[in-house]
Image (cartoon, rainbow, N blue to C red; front, top):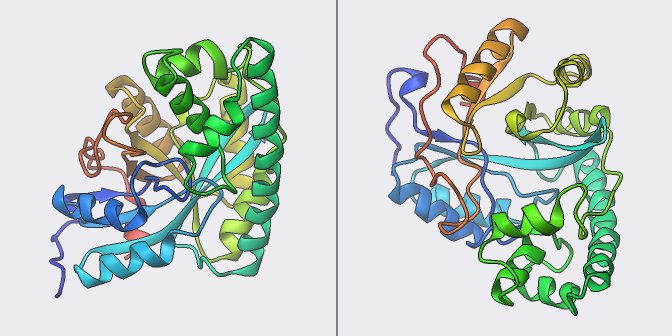
Length: 287
C-alpha cells in the first residue's frame, strides 16, 4: 500500500510526539499506530520517555498500513532547576550512543520511583510504589504518571491532573528532586543517532523569561534545531508566542499532541491545530 503525499508540507497531518505503554501511555505501540491511522494521521513519531523499546513494533504496523513513521524519543533533562523534555526525531534507535545514554537515565528513574514511594508513605499513602508498578507495563520505567494513576484508582484524588497539583509537582509532598541528563548530552545523543533535537512543549516549564532564553541559547549552541510550536499542552496564545520564538531563533517548528491516552490527554492523535503557514515544519527534514 502506498501512502498519499499531500502537495504542501503544511497539508500533512503530522503528530510527532506521543507515548505508549513502553513509557507512560495507555496504549501498546501497535495500538497507538492504529489510533493514529483512524484519526487521519499522515506522519507519526512515537516518542516514549527515555525509551526506544516500542519503535520496532510501531514501525511494523505503520509499514503494513502505509503510514509514514519516524523513530523518536523524549529525553528528560535537568536545566535551571526544572525538568525539561527534549524530543529526538528521526533517530537510529539502535545507535549505541543513544541506547547507552538512555539506559543510564532509566537506572536513575528506578531510584527516583523508590524515593517518590517513600515520600508518599510519609504523608500516609501506603504501598504507593507497588501501586505505581501495577500501572507500569514497563517495570524499568515507573514515572510520576503511574503514581498518579494509582492514587486515582485508590480514590485519593479524582483525576491525574489533581494528583499532580496536590502531590507530585515541586513543593508538594510526593515531589523529589532528581538529576536527569545534561542538555548538551541529550542533544548530543540525538545528533549522534542522526536525529533532530526538539524542545518539547516549552510553555509547560516554569522558567523565567531570562532562563527560557538561556535554555534556547544552550539548546541551539548544542546543535538543537526545532521547537514544538503546536502542542496538546499549549493554548492558542502560547502557540503564537512560540511561533514568534521559532521565527526569531530560526528554528524548525514541530506539531504534536503529546498523546498518552483518551482519558488523560487534552488532544487526541492527529487533532492538533495546524502550524502557522510561514514556519518551516520539522518534518520537511524527515521525509
